[in-house]
Image 1 (cartoon, rainbow over the protein chains, first blue to last red):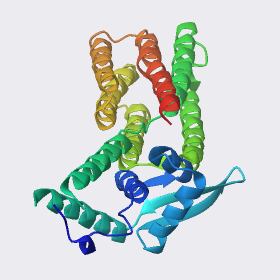
Image 2: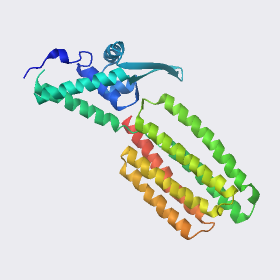
Image 3: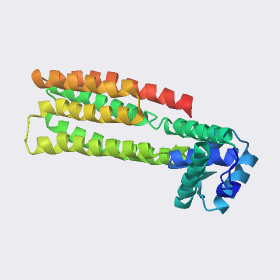
Image 4: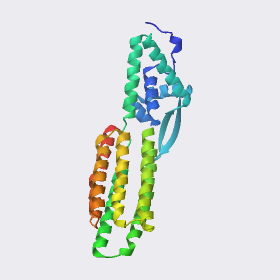
Length: 97
Length: 196
């Protein structure tokens, strides 16, 4: 059965971005390499997708230096929570139809 | 989007969320550190009592050791927090639990005896009882059954030390720290290395 595609959030609706959001919803904050392992992505691929989520205001980044090495830590924003919740509800409504 | 696609998407999300929530949040370093420091202090205390030497300095020895250890532990914790790959609500809850029980143990150990509220011989069972609460809660938060069950050991040991108070309770407590704190700490450390 088909579904109105306009109800699906395009920013989240991609395997890798859905996975990033699912990880960040479950933890408070995650470092880049941790996300990379969890979603099984390459550096470049992950950067591109995180950037999309950042631009949409769903994810925020904190950049810091630890032992002179750069470290990026990501967390989901309240806008991101709401969007992810809405996305889940959309999926559930498709299943119910 | 088709219903089957939505179902597989939802099940993937559930799986990722479940996996991420099961992240090992306690790497055992604090257990090992405090276990070694307190065991060393207990053995020194025991020897000083048996040899009846520097008896007046036992309280001061504890005070200096515990405050220094708290400072060092704070520095270790801060460094770990900066380096950590992930931080979770459960991790923050655990941190609060151990901070609160640490404050309670400092009060039992120092204020309780300085005000002569009870005989110092009962510090070990009182602290052991407190540790039982902390381990039980910590194991529950992390969903680690064996860690939660160490609480039984802490409470059983506390019961023995309450019923048979003597100078030797210091050694019993030191043995409990090795078996119920340092060894679990090492196991948690190994587990954290495997998972992250």
